[in-house]
Image (cartoon, rainbow, N blue to C red; front, side):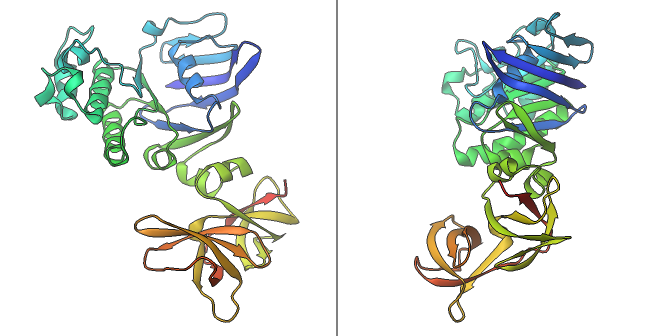
Length: 337
């Protein structure tokens, strides 16, 4: 099991990872997200032993690393999968996967499982991006690591390929029974693939929980704003609901929020219809998403909100509309900033 305790990492005088604590189960996949420069890749590099740590402890099975006693990267039994594949161009697929291995059992196993058998004698230059990433993953898993670190492994691939390959990678990791930390900028990827989700902000882990909990019950306004589309409306908190210009909405207080609060509204928490009478909002913009439309509306006595609806519901910019809250679950309420 991976255990990270009070991890701090410095770049010169700047502390880029601050007092990080987390642990991973035997086959758990942890997704790490956050703004550019928040410390995601730095955490991977520290766990892999590629950079020194300033404080804390990293331990995995039979080794541990501290500021005073490090462990060489090659002795950590940690596999890494990079966004640029990092394959040897002069070696075949089989030779890449088998690099520094004497036993071909694992090589054959992962070539077959990841659909690479027909490419074993091909060199990487002739492969597609998705095939190259499968080779990189097969190479990592064939070495039977105790932990896999993935640094934006799908960022160089097109959207359609990302959708299928993310599940292939997840299934391969689960089949191998190996824990993994997966860094990504793709929020859909983060929310759908991981067992748990960690959201970083300026080197601090703001929340670590299941993806559903992070999305529906964010621990801070930053998390609420960072994950998915977020709108906020002011209201008065009262026991289990917030009174807003759109009516009373079921709510739960975050960090003891009370009195006047900001209520988190996701696009799916709202409905939009052609106004009956004057309506309560004006449609400001619309974005076609294929199966859906995402609309921006401006309430007459409130803020701008985002609403997602079926592609069959069409509205025109400037049109008067009626907006209401349709959610039945409690929404997060935050103290005013």
